[in-house]
Length: 241
Image (cartoon, rainbow, N blue to C red; front, side):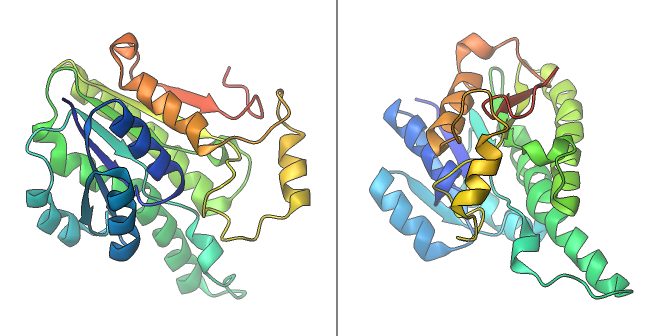
């Protein structure tokens, strides 16, 4: 039985990923900042829950003793566009600009860096680290959010080299539009969905299950020679070539 850790596993894509691994008979631990949401999700899934803020080095350090002593699969899913929770900085307000950028870098890059670094000694031969990126990293906008996801891709390339020495892999799954998540905070209109779907080749938005299935593949034996890669799961809205 594999030990699987999924950050941000209480809702949306993270929940779908955790559910997919549970269905395979793996022992899954989900993490997240909202304790009540996390525990409710764990109850439905029949998995373990460890609440903490993955972007806080203090919180990660305190939580690491509650995480599995062996980690076969780590999925860095925690994150999101923190700009959606903030007011636009006023003209010339450099402190507000800096805080907005720090927030997205912390949520989307540092959360993955901190949790992975803390668990690195527990990842052995055949281990898998999968981080959830975004189409926003490939020049589709989103400012500091896109920049943070681009940095996640660069960091993963270095991580793949580090893990390669012990036969483990690191990859990024980069979604396009995914419906049925909390990402847009309920602000995405039907027109917004239509506009994004028009950019795809298969004429539909993504679902959490699309992303979960790709993560499960990267954690499988069939993906043992895939590392340092970015897998674009967006219906062809961005062609990774």
